[in-house]
Image (cartoon, rainbow, N blue to C red; front, side):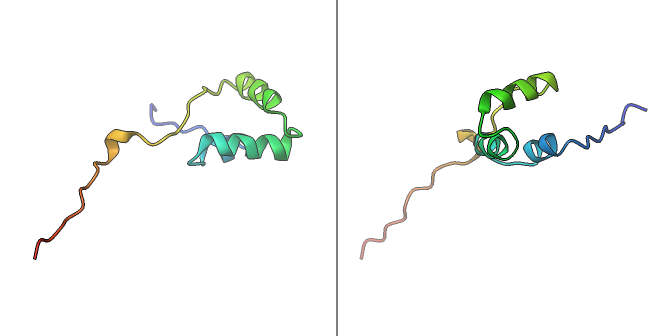
Length: 72
């Protein structure tokens, strides 16, 4: 029974967990639910034991491609 998945019905946590850009989603949630107060949102997330991780793109995920140039 190690494969148990806990489903939360909290819409704030669901919206934050399903987001791609965590920082902008936190600002939107603070605007919608906490009267645009990020400190209240942070307190709410701490009371629900949500870690402060940011979801930013890792530069190691892609490599830069050089432009191909043809000499005629």
